[in-house]
Length: 589
Image (cartoon, rainbow, N blue to C red; front, top):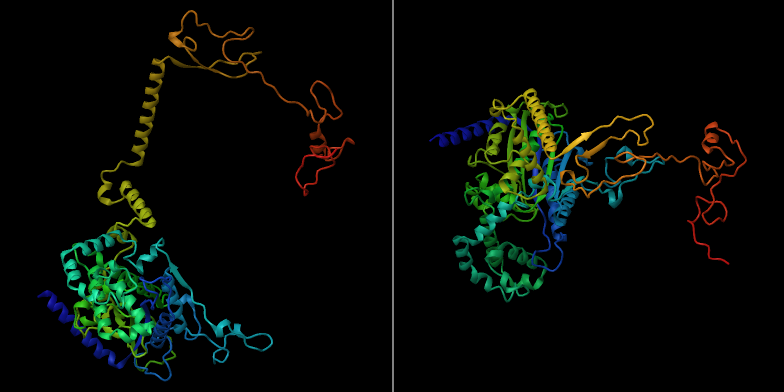
């Protein structure tokens, strides 16, 4: 009953807000857009998994659609769907206003670049807007290569970077992989394989004739559909023989298979981890924009695969809502979902006036989805979290509560949920372990020992161990004997560490006499030998040479003698050139 009342209240609030906004203009502050990469070489193909020309054009059109809504609406198009982001650059890329994230997969990063060509197209010298840096001293105009191509700052993230999880939360997630294996072994999935075996066997000798028969089954439904779609798009023979109905059937089977992998089936809901990470990242980016007063993170663009779409559709209630049929299938290449942050301003406000950033109570969030990349594919808003079709606009507070129920607080939550063996998870685990051992939580403070008392205990323990060790050494017959240096002693200031009874101690026999050196006392004697002068310079201590000390001449700063101190080769052939070849053996007669 409470949930029904809450849903009705949210619907009435949304209706009231829509009526209020009828006389106001929308001011868009930020948007987070996640885009499915373009067509690539399929998995069951001999070539590398590169982006195809068709895939690049799909993302180019997707970028143009985002430009029409958030940057600069086309002059010959409808202005109704245009919601320009406040303060964003219209003609030239300002990378400081955007955050562009892509996985390190070639077809994904290439999709991001193709998208950016549509978002900020090349600026030729014929454009009306000319920057100061384009002007040359001679009065001519000079643009970037490729007709003014603009260079975006795309961050490509490998799976060694913890930011990777926001784009592909399923990759590297150990529990997600285990869940896939369990799903494949489940009775429901096995039944689906048996029921659809005839569909794939009928295509084994035609569409899939180049594939191994062992992979032509429902377990590879998504990869087989990708292969069929690629052949349909690029092979005239296949396009003429494969009916659209058969292609749609393969698409439906692939969608059902991937929904089983990327849903909350099972107790821990790990299958939907990719949807949780993408929702968390969207919330983070919009929060950053709010914290900066609408200055930073105006447009966040993320690129990846289809898994985040399917899992978020289920987590947000879209796959079970009034438009469920739209969200229960695999999205087409170039599809987008966007989270839009906006407020309202009076319609009478001056368009050139600076608009102050509103309070969070006046901020709204809208979710939009665009399936495919065709020019006539619209960006449609949908209600999240079971609010029906009317509450497409959510207050920031309601959106925060909805994300809180399904999102992640940080990377450590992902590592814990996935039990991942990734390197950054290992580092986080070690830090959390050390934090736990220190016991910083308040409920443990009452049982902790103060640093002063701990120091006393440590010192006492150390002293006790020292006394115990000394006692053991005494029992074993060891003692430290320090002998004072006697005048005229020939063994310096060395003390002796001796053992009672000589070398063998108490076991010494009468025949085991100690070593006796005539003229010395027991123990080792040390005679100091100091080298005086230089034999090479005829400064023998017993035979006076020509030079008393070379150091004296150096210290005086002048040459006292006429001796030749120049370095000569070891072979005795001339002086050494420090820049010449190393010493070589003399092989002459």
